[in-house]
Image 1: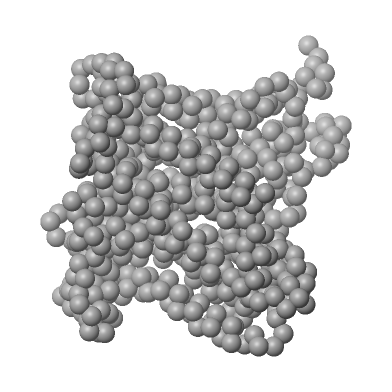
Image 2: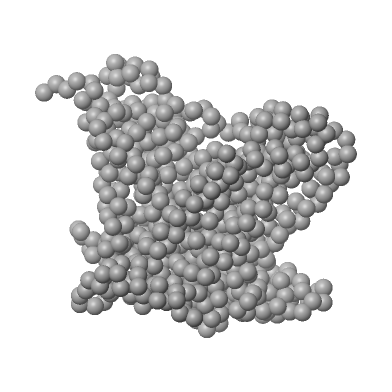
Length: 298
Length: 300
């Protein structure tokens, strides 16, 4: 189990249905496949090109019908960076995403380890309660979370704090389930040998189970980061001051005035999307294989 | 006191699970129960008290649904339209693309990345991009229509075209995920089946109909359930693509979740909003159960 997520073995397995090569008379089918795929791929890229192209247009060109800027300029970028709170939103999104990803990586893998490798009274009911929480849509919890955040049991309000934005996602049931599946592949002999050598139970998790599950933990971290970076509905509710907005909330609030500053919105969108796309392109193999193997949805 | 190894392990298991147990109890289970409880009260956080009203909020939901026209009714009707149109179109497109991708070798990784990019993009950011593409006069779609001498379209500004326009973005954005799941499913089909079909001289359509489709059933069921749920929960695209995030024009695009958000956080009718989320929860649960039992029975 632990090795099965290593990069590329799922796509390497050519013995199975991969690229069913039919002999002869096939080139027509292939030709049309390439033609159609190229056309569809084009529609996938066009909105991104439009976004970038608009972000480089001077204001007077926005309402014109030219697709590419006649006089490209970086004015929109300097305006967005210097005159809006976008740099703060960037920082907030980053802090929240890192916070919850670190927490998820630790707690989900620890809980997964316990469910995979320990026997204790109440194990089944606890696991089932964790899993059934997946059936409840987050939308149902938003209002209670908001009430709880406004009047927390201890300390001042959680509204407009990093913890307030991050708390619903610091431990995830899907992550625990995924980690349990992988940790089941950690050999019991290895753990028992460790016990005989006097390794503590936490040491077994940290020095044996975690290193063996690093690929799974990596996939979990990538999805979790993406999910938090793009999260919208809860950050929208959990923040009221512009200084605490995350990127999606900030971009949504750009246009509260009567007219829509299209060039600034497209610039903000470019700034929020492009760095992530670069990261995704670098790690695409791990992400795509991670989804294929786990069925996780960002 | 000396503990046996088995007992020591039990103690450690509980120590390791302590924080997750508290978390799930307090952040997941308690709020879910709290939502049910709120739905039985006239819950307004700004009011002095929150009187118990029994099932009045639910009665109000059904009363609104029975009216000839109401925002709640539009929200439910639109949400059902999004699901009934969006899920089949998205899955058929994704399956067609996955079948084509599965047969090519050259450049297949590049295609896969391109289809996948929208899925990892922020919905809010890309929905605003689409909103601009749909604009009259300077939006790309109308620019193209003019180039080929077709009449200009209002898209998001028309009560008829707004819902399909929003839906197009959602289908476009979520397709990459379905493609990957389908591709993974296709890789699991043993190649020998196709070789046997080829020897028998089966046509492409027959091979697809009698080998690929039945063996792909697990991926199809999985995606049907997952995508239905995600269309039922639609929120961000509508708030980003409509005037002031109202789900207009004339409630033509409003969804259940957007309606809930507006009732709870703009009108502070949190009791009524909670009852809407409970109905949504029941809907999601029902759809999941029906789809799982129907689809698995048909194949067996």
